[in-house]
Amino acid sequence: MKKKTDYLKIAHRGASGYEPGNTIRAFERAIDMGADMIELDVHLCQEKIPVIIHDAAVEGNLVEKLTTVQLKQFDVGKGERIPTLQQAIDCVKGRCQLYIELKGKGTEQPVIDLVSKNKMDNQVIIGSFDAEKVRRSKEIAPHILGSVLTGKTDIDFVSLAKSAKADIIHFCWERHPSPHVLLTDELMKTCAGAGLKVMIWHEERPEEIRKIVQHDIAGIASNLPDLLTLDS
Image (tube, rainbow, N blue to C red; front, side, top):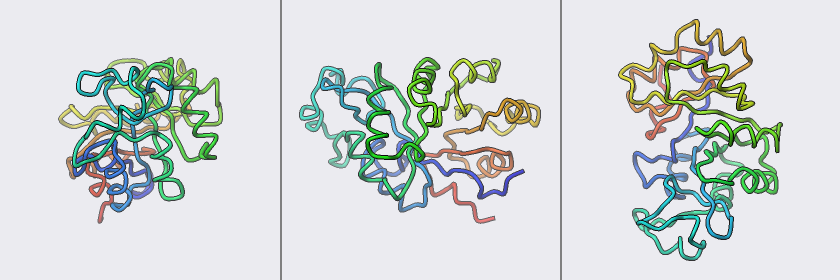
């Protein structure tokens, strides 16, 4: 079993419980709170530039139809604007790692190109709920860690991960009353036997966090990343 501190502390969309998620403001706050890694969501805008936003549309406008200049017109909270992936990289490089969740179609190649251009191949995880996106990413860049996300509890997780060529199985069980009970010894042993790292998110219940990290997990995410630094 790992020590309690031996796991990645991942800020879900930055410190999104305190600041507008997926913004530079949220990323800076997360770094100040000691996050090891910042998770963010990526779509492509009209120019095929990766931009950081969770949904496919902003105020009823499809992101893929808007330019970066047009996207900058939207206030996404506290005066923050929708950043590009390059701006996010400029913010965190040398300070924190990135967990890039692929949301929009066609995001695989542009994201990997940008990661490689910035020489951050060993500082990122590329993940998605879409196993095909993860698989394509691994085919393009086998050396970059790939993660497949799932909120399900009753499927063959190893088969899902293998179909995606993923290195990580990422459980998104935040709606479950006690996610730690799903992380059985048998499940953890099966994942380890298949060479899979295990991550989980997002969790904002301190006692649940303490129970989750007793398992051999690679990382846990929270909207409140300061909760991930346990004092005992």
